[in-house]
Length: 299
Image (cartoon, rainbow, N blue to C red; front, side, top):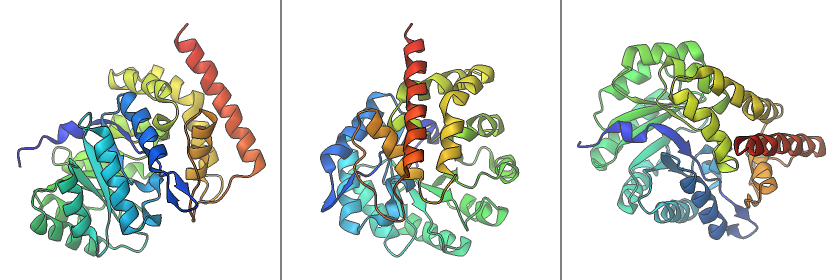
């Protein structure tokens, strides 16, 4: 296909969707993209899970994807997230026509392995120029039954893990290490997933604290796990605990941190829920920890 999957290795940025009462604030979205591109992310992913893909209408998905591609302006590869449903082929075709480098197929909560395999094959036939990554999440896990079927489709170039199962991730890479690029969804799992062979990471901190993100990624990439561990302990672990402490506050927490850092996060849509006062206070404390860490970086 003339495409080197290694182009998608490294840090992935996921601009969050700034919802407003009458739609989406595209100007704020452009700012969010610029923050991440300027920070030197290796890949930008449009309309991902943290951007609340499942809350976007077709026209909103189209406008957001168009803006992300145009805002990046060739400075990094763009992966466009596409829901695994009846619009997958049309959205894949549109994304590639807009200039996306690849698509990330995003199963819904009720999607089955058979449905993923069927959609992947249909995209590969109807949109032959599309390079496909598959997001293994919820009911679609990194089992041999899925990976073997994906490996048979040449246009599938990667897999993103979204299930936190270390044993399953290890087995998947052991069976197909060279076949796919491996993307890890969770910043707090960077150390073990890197040790098992992950090629790319999706750190939420890149949206509001890119200097912090680089401070753990650079030593990890160089093999200095001790330094990476110490930096991750400054922020990533506490934030992960908070985001998982109550259902549907993950996106709200990241947007609150963006707002605290002067980057407009705007509003959310359901199923995201508002933060409670004690959660906001905890995030302010995490933000202060970040600021002290960043001050230490430049002294």
